[in-house]
Length: 217
Length: 217
DNA sequence: CGAGACTTTGAGAGCAGTCAAATCCTGTGG
DNA sequence: CCACAGGATTTGACTGCTCTCAAAGTCTCG
Image (cartoon, rainbow over all chains, first blue to last red; front, side, top):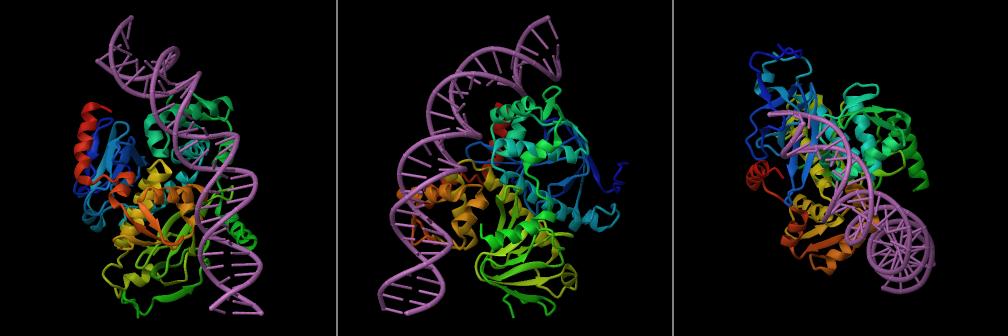
């Protein structure tokens, strides 16, 4: 049984790297929670250009569509996850975190953070924010695994793989990070990354708002 | 009483244009639903750069934060909205649409659409998609009100006001749209806009996915 | 060890940002 | 109703960043 104490009516599913869990347009029967590995959700533009809408790590719930899937879900790495229905949750056999409202609210918070992330303009800002997000998600002080390939990062951040690669290289030169192979990275200068990403805590925000409103800038 | 048949324990609030409903970091006591006017939610980056996360029209629910506000909410126009608590909803006095799960799910869908919108690359694509989104939201066949100012549009789409203005002007020259003053616009060539925006229906998506997977592009 | 895919790097073009200024609206007061 | 002031919008010129096209280098897995 999973660390999540999954109820019996949950179903464990396994996928190989790059396999699809479901496609955009499929009927949405179940929700998913990651047991191990990483999943991605994405949508496609008419020109074939792909937009990732999220990476999902252990404990993340995704696939919260109402009737039909708005997104396609795929395995970034070999993936194990539980699928379950909202009805299954309603039986209240699940763990405390598994209440539909909690799940939805967390997903919403993630989506808003994602929108905020995109708001960052330059490639440097976006990638700095992305690396810090990964670090936070992996609860890693400074050693980070980049499980996804460059094109996943690019399609998540709205950049090309070239710009992603170039920007990461540049950050290495500036000794903000250090690459141990293409899929492992060490944060050398967290403060520098945070400055690039431009984090602004809620504490300072209201103050900032006040200034903005008074000065009118 | 509102068209929504608001229960007695809901509270009607009125705001003048550009007034703030709440600030990022405030404790999140209530949810809001727009009765008339338009609201915007936004967050600020450290450099003062603002990111809008949504425009909210009549019937839209926003402010669904858990404990503290992640975003600031402001009135785009003079605004009337109801505020209510989740507990109030639980009393089941509200209209059918007002079930927390439904509301959260709709908000999540909107957020994902927003992320998808950002995925569009060029200013033309983003603005075409934005105009079509407004048209759909206002259920207008071709006459659209741009209630928000250019800087709101810019901060929503991750562009500058200059680029927004230039791109709109260009679309006028190309006779895709026609401006009747800065805040009213007529769609002259919807097909052209849709082509720019690159809508791709779910029907074609799975097919597309299959091709993609086989050819490996 | 070798093939194929992924990643990195280079050069040049194009699009959006910056700085600057003109024009147009909007709302107020006469 | 008209004039005016301030803000919002539009436009222009130029710069710089990211994309495109191209090729070399590296990693992974059979």
